[in-house]
Image 1: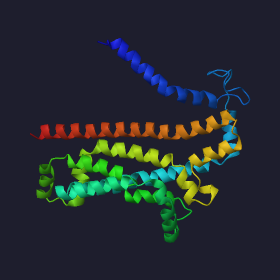
Image 2 (image 1 turned 180 degrees about the horizontal axis):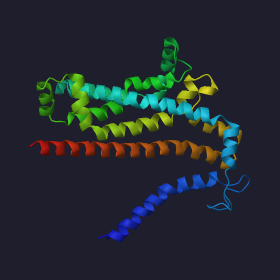
Image 3 (image 1 turned 135 degrees about the horizontal axis):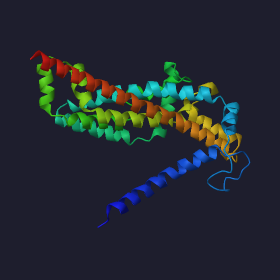
Image 4 (image 1 turned 60 degrees about the horizontal axis):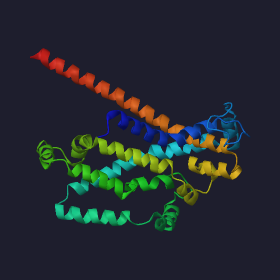
Length: 281
């Protein structure tokens, strides 16, 4: 039997293996220019000059704003459309559900490269080619069949009696989705939001395929441009990578704080409602 200290040490070792590349990236971003990257993990001195060179070499602020705009539009749209599709599939008869699940798996197996040319033609035909809407457009279709299947699985596990009770109370389809299904499927919604954020934040090929102006590029393209400016300038490359990582981490921390505050406010309102009920009776 492995004791608790050994298990704790093993977990810490595993965490260390995963965080070591992040630590290397962070320290290399503050390494002075010209200092050998193999001189050691910890640099002799730390400097912010790499970030000044980063913002001087490329319009990082504009690229960051473009990425934020894409994510701010695509993630909510993905949650909305994927949850609608998953809810609709979950409310179909069982035999029809199997057909739609099979079709979703078949669509999921279609390689993305097979859609590049058709998407390019469609985006240009409807007038969004060369704009950020070309990057956001897949969110109108749930972004991926995988997200639809995640919501389908979550909604299908809700007992039918809950849906029947909502219908008897006069709730329509949208009211049942909003007031019954989505609150129960909150963990799935959070998982889809995180996966969609990662999908759109790290999308490198779509800007190159569908955008024709450099001012609309996103951060992944900026990192590739940095590599073209200087393949051996590792401090500059690591500074760009750190910047592209710090922005989503900051958003995650802010989201966690906002969720904690919202939960605290909700609990306070519930306690106030219970106290008011006890006082009344």
